[in-house]
Length: 233
Image 1 (cartoon, helix red, strand yellow):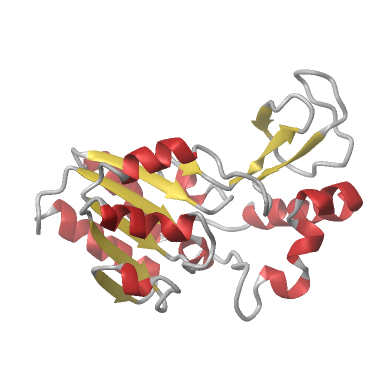
Image 2 (cartoon, rainbow, N blue to C red):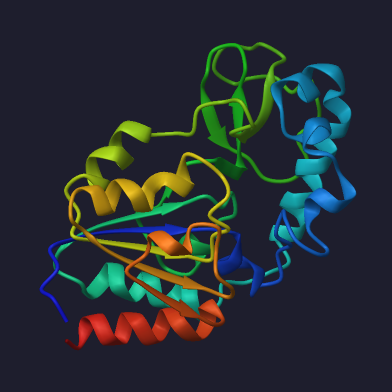
């Protein structure tokens, strides 16, 4: 195995599906019961804040019922034991990476257990329900909303992600559909700078053709195997 110095890992809904969280796409996915336009856009929040807040309250409650799986714990082991640079970027808004032992996770699409003030931009940890009109503890405005990056909004820390992609020598995508941009384009950025690219997924993604290697199977099996392979090489 090559001697890698800088790794960027992207995780998607597939890694958390094995813990019991529904994905957004596919049979039984969250978008089957809700239109994206009704629960995941700034316009939806303005039009029907009660529905949007209730949707994410339900997601927050479900999150409290599930636990990290072997894939989350394997990535925490990699973070602890690998000596090179590592950036773990997740499209997921759950906290399973953190509960699995990861200390440094970049949530590019926000976090369920966080509330964002639409007035002053301050974010704070949040547990339980988040009713519309909740007061911001920083500015006092009744403007707290789910700290979720809605469709049409810019994902968090894109400059940091792009800088890491442009200097990495290995990019790994785990459990992603390859259909949501800008994350779907990360593999192309990594390949452009000469990085090796690896996909670990239950099924081929929309971007499988861009990866040097694709391994298909459950994340709970593939990720621990890959981490063991990397650390023992």
